[in-house]
Length: 80
Image: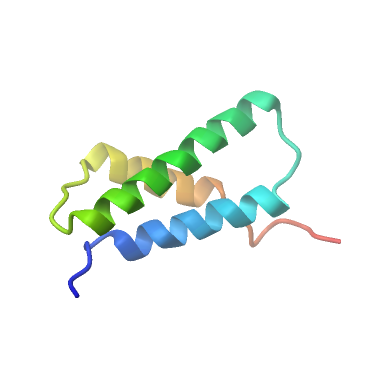
């Protein structure tokens, strides 16, 4: 079955956001609210791309997802 060309990257972003949610540093309530909005947006877009393989994602959204991917990196977090 054919997949959307950005679906794999969106799934990676979703897993990174979910991992950051568990391991992330303590942040303000506003930052958590912003994070929740981003996570819900990614989940909604994943569902849309799974339903419509030909869905076009705007350049703005792609750039925003790239910034989010870099912002919510987890490999530098210290866990004890």
